[in-house]
Length: 171
Image 1: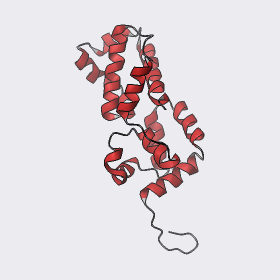
Image 2: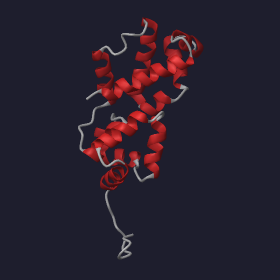
Image 3: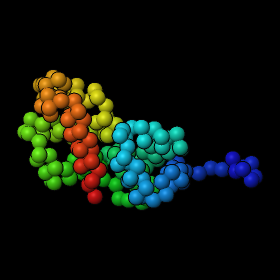
Image 4: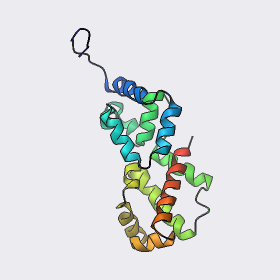
């Protein structure tokens, strides 16, 4: 309702979301800073939903083009008119940049499996601790063995954080 007239205001979900996103993060730089600082992207996405940014409804409105878009790309596309990348394009960028070269071959296999999981389902699933179960099945290693490859749980979490940074550094 319009506070001045009391009449119902209708607005498409894209404009409504853009307005709410810009109300939270006036510039792309503001949003990128917050995205980079977020320990868990899921928490940020939930916060955005509380502020009237409904990603599922946006995806539905945009249609098939949004199907393989990460939430991040959907947000920057709608709010800041940025060209979105697909999750697959982000994964290919990381592979081309050889960002994982500092890791052992076994660790690279794990991170590659995580990128494939990201490509299929997005960042929220990558942050989920249960993602290790899916990866361990495909690599025929237990979650404990995978964590040991990285030198412990803290190092594994750090590697996943770095992988996330690489995925979102794609232009």
